[in-house]
Amino acid sequence: MSTLQTLKSFINQRLAVAVDEIFGLLETTVSNYEEEITRQRRLLEDERSEFQFNKAGRDQAMRFRIIIDHDIKKITFQNGIPSSVEDLIKVFQQAFSITTAIGLHYKDADFDDFFTLTSTSDLKDKDTLKVVHMPPGMIMCTVPNERKPDITSTLLQECKPDIMTTVLEESNPNASTTAPQEHNLDTMATVPQERNPDIMTTVPQERNPDTSDVSSVDDLLSLDSQDNLVPSLPATERQSLWPAVFPIPTFSYNTEMALRQSNEKFLKDGIPLTSPSVKSDILERLAEAMFSYTAYPNDPQRAAVAQALIKKHPCLREPGSFNGCYGWQQSLKYKCANYRSKLKAHGNPELLINSLKHKQEGDRQPAKNIKKPRKSEVNYLPPHPAGETDDSLENVRLALIAANKTKDDVQMINDMMSRTYSYRRKEVVGLSMQLAELKERWPALFDPIQINEEFRRCNTIPLESTFLFQLDRYTPKFLELFSSKGGAVGQRIKSVLIELIQDPCASVVKKRDVTLRCLIEYMGDSVQELISDYYRTAEDKVHEDLKAQSMRIYVCHQPDAVGIIINGTPVLTGLDSMSRACCLLLGLTYALNLDYPPKLARTFEVFQRLFVGLDMLQPKPTSKYISLKNKLLT
Figure 1 (tube, rainbow, N blue to C red):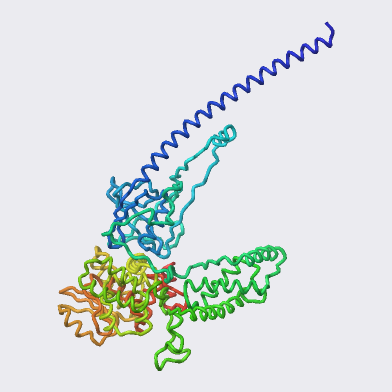
Figure 2 (figure 1 turned 60 degrees about the vertical axis):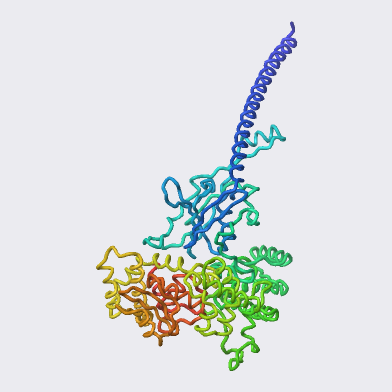
């Protein structure tokens, strides 16, 4: 055999061996793929069965007992509950007309105590849920799940394109942090001084398309006729406070395109945008957005909007301005005035009240007796709800008086009070009606529950829970400051603090009362200007004695009684503590549009700015308040 034939035979043998090895490897690979596909199919069937089982459980009607402040309500989900806590909170906010940030606690059957709700899978039919109002500085956010690529799912999709691969996302237990324990107003609680936006986080579950759509709450839940439900705010009322960081709205398409191109050019060459048409559209949209928070933005608020504008769109920065946006501030001032003129022509009551023909005799001068929010009110003088007139709301007021006499249906009273809010504000603000006449026309207003609700209607935040929470939060630091105070003020404060020194196990209510008395003295005001103490004196005699007082809280000992006097008239009696009386007195100043007593202005400044978080940056805080706040935060 020649050498060529030998080489040919050798090559054929090696190729035959290589082909056998390739086919063997291919058979092994195909077998492995088939086994993996079979395993994945079994997993998908198991997961699909579990998903269908969970979906069937969620689609069943579920009923919950809801605790909101001092009310207990019932809610029924006819088609199952949302699959995420975030959606469930949205449902609760819409169903119960809650405009502030809230959290949910559920009662655990094993521990017989409330725990923070982080997953709706923890809920069962007839469970008890508690709505927890988050203070203004506390923010609840959601941490989205991080999707991890699934190699086996990719493999299935490559091998069998016609197979639907559904992967149910599981919650990562390490991605959810528990919120601080529920704040109990009957126990002292230590709250971190710093505001951390990550105080409460929840991990959303996979959305269930059948139940997670909260755009139509009526389709998702039903409320029994006997259930209490807080009425929703009319669409004409503002829904939130001025934001800490102003959100710049989206402008028209042409303006957004021009801004995007100009921002790129500015970052590259430093050339600003100077188009008059773009500036006009920006000012118009900004004025509209600012009016959604307040009709009369002040200088610090306009400066905050201008700063937010140039931060989002650097091309709008002004080269010759000392802060890059002073020209925008001035332009916003005039544009807001023009925008108010347009709305005044449409009959907006908050603006019409300051027109000359709507002023009372003797006040018809442009700059005299201007009526606008002085204490950071959000809904100072809103228009009537759609379809309502003075006559129709007067009929509701008469029905409200009849309902208030029996007080059988608290929900109906609350609904009518909310419906007539604009009509009542017209009398309180526009007509400056006297207290005696207001008590006769609106007797339901002079009730602690309605004072809280009226404050919420006016400012969109709860009164008592926020006030007492912040008071308890700062009490340890307050007591430390009071103990170190010297001079004559320090001596007066120590004479009050002796009550806590002698009683180390004093109740929370007593600590609050002592703290507020010391705070009044610490701010340079006099306790006697706000609080009158009586011993072994009948309440009727106290009322007679305080007839000449414009604003006073009385505290009777033996027998115990606490009440509030305004313009010599008892407006609230039978209160349980002096601290609650201070809180409700603040609420009354908003409900009745009263000015703070001049001799107690610094004390009420702390109540307003620190305890309930209403601060529109103007008028500027007093030096006493700034000093106190700096010491509290150090």
